[in-house]
Amino acid sequence: VVGQCCLNETIASAFLEATITEADGPLAHAALRELLADEIDHARIGWATVAATDAKTRREIGEWLPEMAVANLKMWREAPRLYGSDEELACHGAPREETVAAALLVAFRDLVIPGFERLDVSMDRVRNWLDAGAPT
Ligand SMILES: [Fe+2]
Image (tube, rainbow, N blue to C red; front, side, top):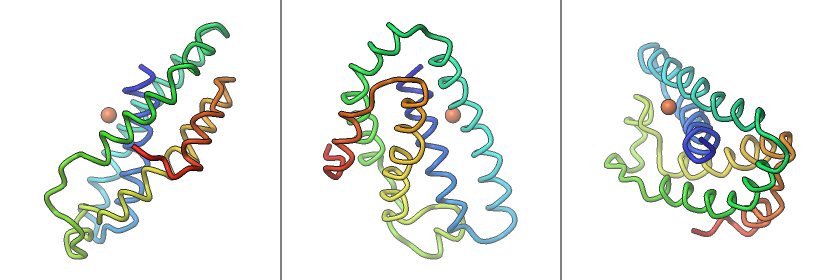
């Protein structure tokens, strides 16, 4: 739940939000907004599940989060994207590589870290890793 929903679906939400900013045209926007709405719901399942756990479980989650964060970001970075950085394709919802790279880090900084901290899960190691450039 933590890896798939809190991390992966939250990052997917940031990815789609960034994609929408580059997309042009009503069809691309409508399709991407539908996908984004789904991903936000999927992420919320994870956040709600963690919120329902006890303090001991959250401490244990905090111990595993740095490794999970690195693994999740690595997966996103290494996911094959055949479209490269084509401006025309970005207009149709296939984001440029630099857009994806930025969205991944924004997801951790603005969503994942604050989300877990709000649930009293320690994020010091994840924050240090992110501050170091999030090496994978
Ligand atoms: Fe999803």
